[in-house]
Length: 91
Image 1 (cartoon, rainbow, N blue to C red):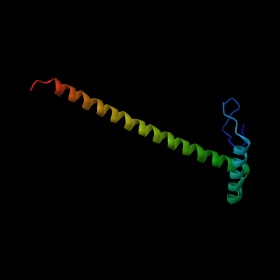
Image 2 (image 1 turned 90 degrees about the vertical axis):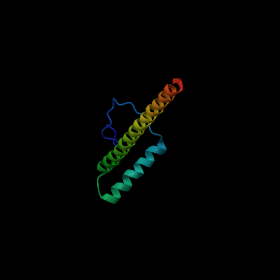
Image 3 (image 1 turned 180 degrees about the vertical axis):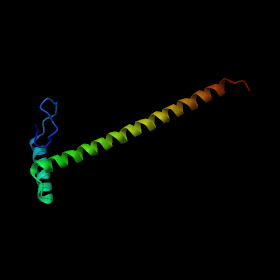
Image 4 (image 1 turned 120 degrees about the vertical axis):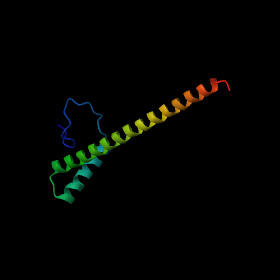
């Protein structure tokens, strides 16, 4: 189990953090620990959960934008089909 990310299992494939990234995370955990009075473990878990929530929100936003893009593409295709049908009509 990872101390900074308790939900991480040893079977999970993750990219190893650089020393600088590890130190930055450690400093962030210690700052939250000092500010909140929580234990190191609880501070790390809190930061982990907030990061996971941020990532999930970004994923939902990405999915929403994908839906908008699909609707846009469908509308353009519909307009193109309508124009083609009009072009084929003899006036």
